[in-house]
Length: 469
Ligand code: BGP
Image 1 (spheres, rainbow, N blue to C red):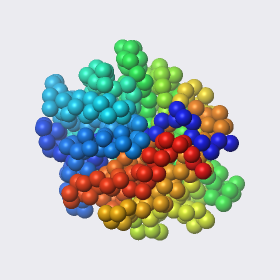
Image 2: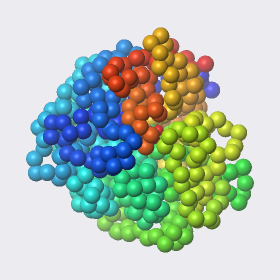
Image 3: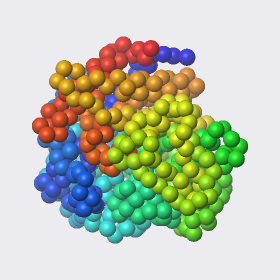
Image 4: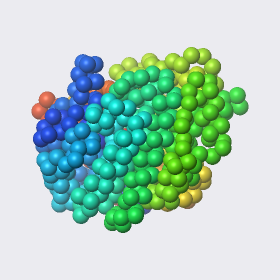
């Protein structure tokens, strides 16, 4: 068992356009559904967020200085095509990302670029988002534009960030626009359609022989039966299919196994839902199943699941009031919180073993996976600001334990190539606003000053000595 991180193991930091950039209406950027949704909600806005639109040279310089060798950035689709499917690209938006990527290269920070991170242009989102096939076509066209335009600067591409969280946020939990609840048909159809869009985009990338690598990011929270009980095993399995395995099958098998479809149909039957999967869709999935150069896993927590037959009942803890989370899906299962496992103020269970187990499972069940990066992992924490040193020891402990989980997976034979901490600097959180901080660098959102936290100094040292003990 290795306690040292391999020398070549990549250490990066993650961000996303809408959560970092601000400037939501600048230089011709088109609207996204979040703009109106957040305004109506009235709790917080995504402007100026971390003002990354203007401050990126500072964040990249800090990355360079503190041993952050790669940065996950996403392109805001609506900066490039304000309505998602415009005939012409918006020159100012296109230029912004050239400048950003060039600056990353100048600082020796490798950009890993996500094409879609929860921010479909409103013009397409309001027409059904990915439930509408036109959005699939528009996405592929936007992807091709980016592959072409940024081919000199970008060598690592990611099609989608977290298909399950975005579709469930939109159609099941109702915490993301259009805030629909308990609609299993839309949730599953949305997942499937986004996978078709992914398959088409990577096929195109490979057919046109762009230089570099391409992959997809799934949020994979490991589902364990509550109290290890037999009667809860099926619930954990159903929930795993819904959130993980449906997407993994689409990614790496190119079809849904009978076991997975049985589970999907059981969930849909219990909730009066339906899904449409055509032969043509399956042909697209099949053509792409061996083209993923890497899988990004975003991992924050695992879930312990108990069988549940009551009504759908979700309370999303979006305030950090510990103990308020409820997540119970009719005919699927209920998440339990009373185990002897630490959790943060948002009720996210801190369970590094789940990351190791998940990576081992992917390698075993999907042997054509090639390579894994942890593309997000980190700890939401209410940091106390002071000008001396922001002491975020619990975050350091969290990151260290999850990196150890990576070494355990490597030791078990899994090809884990790197880890991106969420987040590089503090950013805006979709459903929590600004009190749930994740960054190595503290952002004073009033002045937009950056301050390295204790975790940033620890990270710098880790990158040098690779010592996890
Ligand atoms: C992931 C998203 C990120 C980020 C992170 C933390 O689901 O990809 O965008 O937000 O979770 O989540 P939260 O901000 O809800 O704590």
